[in-house]
View 1: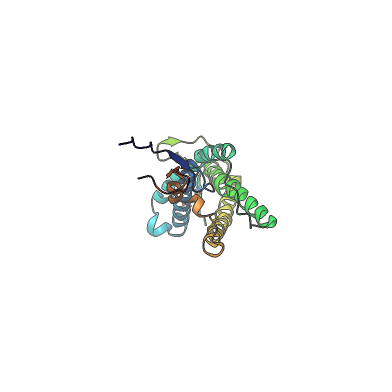
View 2: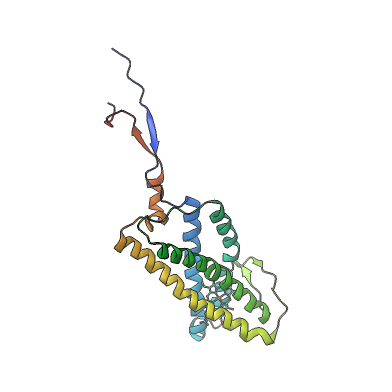
Length: 211
Ligand code: HEM
């Protein structure tokens, strides 16, 4: 009986339009922290008497939100060294520019300026920030009563402005998925990781599986 031919296995990336697993992890981790921080911050202010009589929500808000100051450094470093997948070919030039601007605004305003403004507000108020309840952030300035209102206005304005920006980002991602039916949202979903993983394929000429 002739010896069985060795099975050759070729690997083929199925979805080349996907972000790297690390980029996805950073995206969803920071999204979860950001949304939780937003809800906690708003609850701390607007439900003060019922839910926040001893500043527990405020302290938790700061403990969680301040982690973004560290994660953003890792995220930007990763993004600069690992380019995003190409946008769908059918997207017009103005839409591509809008997408680039929107992403830049999310990084600069939602992930950087907003936590920085919170840090500034706590600093001028002379209040501590314990990152994850463990490590205290050094104040950005000495306590400064005169700057309190301005720092507060900056944080509150950025919180609501970036809230609208993030909502817009979610709606555009859903439009890509539901209306355009392109792979933009799928490229950021954990599920796409499995598809990206190379799949074994028989290397025969007709593509039929070897017996
Ligand atoms: C170092 C990071 C941050 C610090 C130190 C900080 C600090 C604060 C403080 C002291 C308050 C007032 C809470 C109170 O009066 O009891 C507040 C409110 C708030 N924060 Fe932050 N924050 C930070 C980051 C963030 C981030 C990343 C977000 C959004 C995801 C956010 C969203 C909000 C919102 C929505 C409010 C309520 C604003 C309003 O009055 O309408 N904060 N923050």
